[in-house]
Image (tube, rainbow, N blue to C red):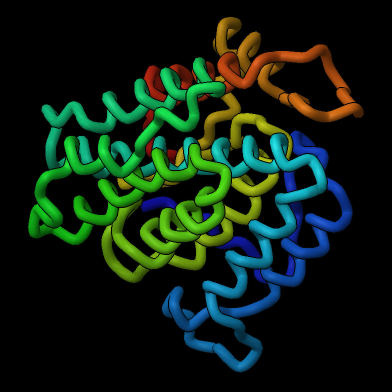
Length: 267
């Protein structure tokens, strides 16, 4: 697996993402700490991973509750797309991830019917077994179950925390204890800023390794159009920076984008 090997003292977010100083300062502080849960040796200057996640997710929220919820949905979708290769590597013919992505799209196309959407009912239908007896698969499926729960604004943060625990501490993205800090750094440098901007991360971590998306995106005009269209969704905001685009567009775009990509490990 390709290591990021970021120097801990140097936090540098890609200029692709324009994040506010409050979020940058939060990421910078969290970056400086070490984490026992990530199997780091030097834990003198440490906080718990749970505390770090909570701080970052709070920094993603602002007074615009709709836009804040969209950022949580966006992060959940990025994580789910990072996790899907784990499931496919063990269960290549399993269709439940596809069904859940479709349910996310269907749910967001009819936001006014939120009271009719029952995440737990769908979860019980798709996952009658509590466990398949494999930690990686169990935690990967847990990520997809919580993707459905993130759609409920009142449960979004709690569900996203569980997703992050499965990914950063658990085996949902890849098994084993190695590269855990690299995975956490990827989340801080790519996933969080992309979620703030409702943009596509420059790189993705999967069971296949760490892969750059930038060149792939640049080579595809169709994806470049999606990239431009999805940069910001300002539904509910009075300070729109770009023409308004519906949340459906960016959800469909990122799902289609990741599902069509053939990720190759960057060596």
